[in-house]
Image 1: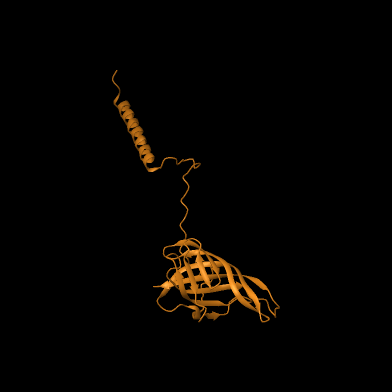
Image 2: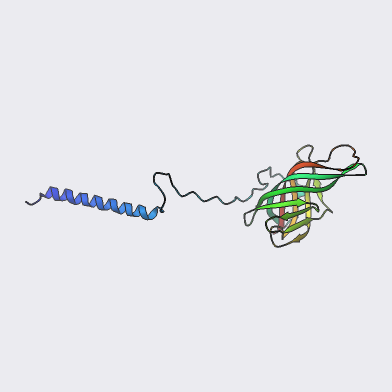
Length: 208
């Protein structure tokens, strides 16, 4: 028995809809990576974000005293936060700075890369990742009072020598800003050493 024209049209319409549905599923299967569930239970985890470029101060107030600015032609290279101690020894009845001992963590600017550093006598800074070493010149240091009462001074230090090809290879100037703590005990002393906890932000510059 021949099908009625309306039945033929209905059957053809259903075949077209089924074909379109299979076509859409094929597109989805190509666009969605294997292992990704529409139920949301086994999605591929997002990649870890890259470290952000440091702001001018690495999360602290970026107002740096004008006296601590490096000479023209030098640009920011790295910003690191420090936690440690200032070590003092008794000399002739008064406390005198012996050395700093601190760990620094932060990032370089170009390229943006996380770095960690040790700070010790010299003043010196050494990368514990690539071994590069920076020594500051203790002569001609510019000093500005800290904004935090009872804290060591903020500094601008000229680089004296560098070693290696890593983080500190081309550093020319160093700033120590946002200092908190670190002062020697008040009053005279009779001998020995003391350690005063401190924290600060160190910024390193290179020639442009």
